Length: 482
Image 1 (tube, helix red, strand yellow):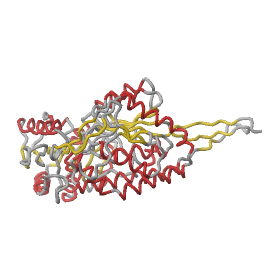
Image 2: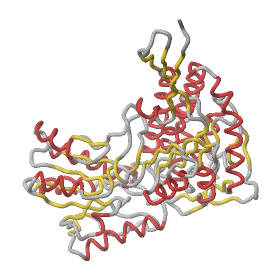
Image 3: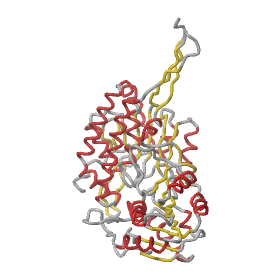
């Protein structure tokens, strides 16, 4: 076991615990397919015990002042920053992403803790003008209570802090189930929370190889007042149905099918840099990845040539190796999906510009790929690729490309490049997406609201709006004040 991996039990009520059954499961390095650790394999009863701990800790945590919660969160933030070497190595080993990206994610994850530590001190209320002289009318904002979170593997730290930090800042306690593939980052984060003196039961982590039973506890236990989920639309819909019986508050960050539009008047160098950042970060395995490229005919050839030159230079390999910028896909199912989408496109007439095949390294490595001549009858246009494949179509007309971009049930992120300010406003307002990158391929930050529309989910994470997701409004009407 690598020296950085020290925590393999669930973290419940401030203690490290084996699963009730004693079962464990393997965590595998996707670059080598070798086991790097065995962690507790929890079930519904284990999850219920974690809810017990969060419920028991709630009143004490709520009673702390916002300044006290701020101070504890700042300690957590500082420890995450100081532990960057450990956290980055763990992340690369369990997710496969290049070490440079893992370091960047440590800073990104920490930024959410810092941001919401500050927001804890800014949970303001209101005084409403009274309807009569003997009344005072006020509005308070209070934490919703015990919260649950289910997070994905592709950003195993940041997707946790984006949920846990606002919850804790608001005075809520939390029970987390990290992704099966990447529990080690979550457990290391829990260790640092304990080291920061965040009280027992305030932040709990339950690991499990199959999340269905744990998910049912999270969605059906009446003591949990809020569920936050990042993952597939299909699972999100199931959780929404399960949450309905106890009328929980929910945040859902679900699937995407992001268009990346390059108009004739775009700065090509800038557009290519944005395309590389948006498409190939984490080997194309991000929820806001550019999925469908639309390039206007006047610059199509130049854009494809410039993008091809950049993609051909990418070094593929184990994330801990020097100079690597593209790692493996996370598992065999993901590899098969990417290979299948590329094969379907090729059979239907797509042009292979770069790559288009499994990588010579074998295993779960796939060549960074560019496909041209993409048409709407190809599966790759309609499914989230989640791999290092840029699928490019040519277009002529602005109105037509907006219609194509919006022709999807998803609405998470969209990107477009243009130097025409009138077009910038027209296209920005016409795109049916929760987030739009304009001449920019990287849009996420703790200070901005992250989330989608349509079947990409509901609610926002990050920013002042992300705090609202964990707060309830309480109206106070005081009478008899003559």
